[in-house]
Amino acid sequence: MNDNALQGQVALITGAARGIGASAAEALAARGATVYVSDVLSCDATVAAIEQAGGVAVAQQLDVTDREACAVLGTKILEQHGRIDALVCNAGICPPGSVSGDWEQWDQVLDVNLHGTQNTVAAVWDSMVSARYGRIVILSSMAYYRGGVIVGTEYSASKAALVGMTRHIARNGGEFNINCNAVAPGIIETDMTAAFDKPDLDEIPLRRYGTAADVAGPISFLCGPESAYMTGTVLNVTGGIVLAG
Image (cartoon, rainbow, N blue to C red; front, side):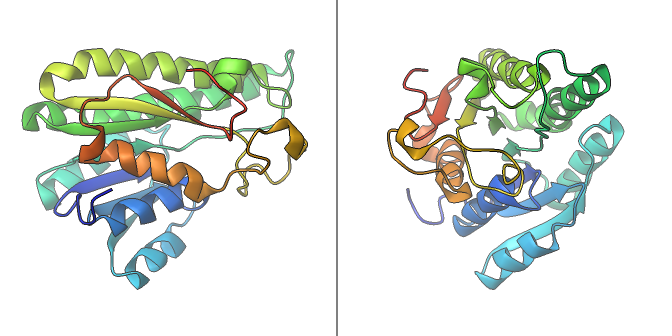
């Protein structure tokens, strides 16, 4: 990928306090983008890492389930920079669950994973249409394709819905040069997955668990010029657990 390919661009990353979101923010900043890092948690550590590496980042407290707050943040970024070039919808939750589950958890997971993604897309959509340019990356999961084992039905349902959303946005955004793609991680070692039992490494063709950086690379690629002719695509980043799109 070309260095500084995102110079002068502005990106918004949700769920960027840690894990995949933080790593994605660092990757985009390293390519020259000014990154707004948002989360319900503090993003100070992410901003510090980016600034230490010579990048530019702004921390923003954000609950993606708050539609008005998402809209306000979109307006704030536009007022300060006049543009939002890329959106990475990474905010999500993954509580342990079952098929029967409970309705409170179902509502919570769908509210964050699905509704939260729609809220953030809606916050940047009109500006991207006006600019006739945009890159949207939505974080799904391999659970969209093969189902979950230790997660609840609501998690797999939310991640499958995000693939449908990705393709819908891609079809509607094409005429405005808005590309929308999804990344579907597999077993990634992050704080979120630390409490889960992981499969044996011999069940993974690449014989290792993934890292946040393994996912940040594809995200950065989808936000850059190298992916200009890709939209509606799902990139499986699973170490080979999922071998089909």
